[in-house]
Figure 1 (cartoon, one colour):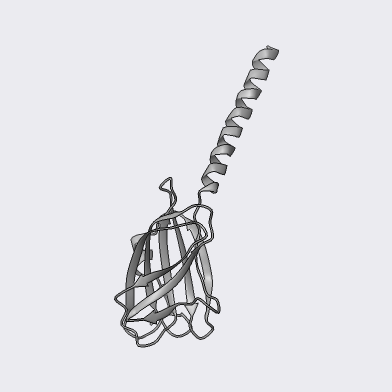
Figure 2 (figure 1 turned 60 degrees about the vertical axis):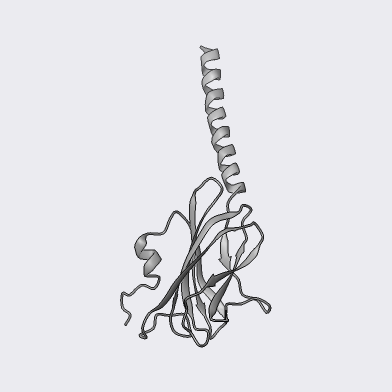
Length: 166
């Protein structure tokens, strides 16, 4: 009887240890893409392309990176002007790397505020996404979020919520 109890306790402990090891392995490969702005690096227009700097602050590579951007007013809020939107992508962003995500079909004469989504996968194929808004007036990002899971089609193609906006 005592041997059966000890075996059951050991089996429970082993299951917990295996689950914890799996979680630690998953976290050790997790990418985290965030927008970047500094004195040297900022979103900008160059040769008709809009460049968005991203940094992978996670410990694993971000794979199958895809992004959508929607421009608003100078503060990064929705605008009553016609919608200016584009998408971009890249194969991967290594851990600790800074990249310029290139949006090629953006008809802007000067930088504006914007909101964006970026979706990516870790090496196990799990989907993650980051989102934020940028104020050109303040030269800063706000509402930066990182979430597990894929974006819905509505989130991909309607970055700004239209409820209560023009």
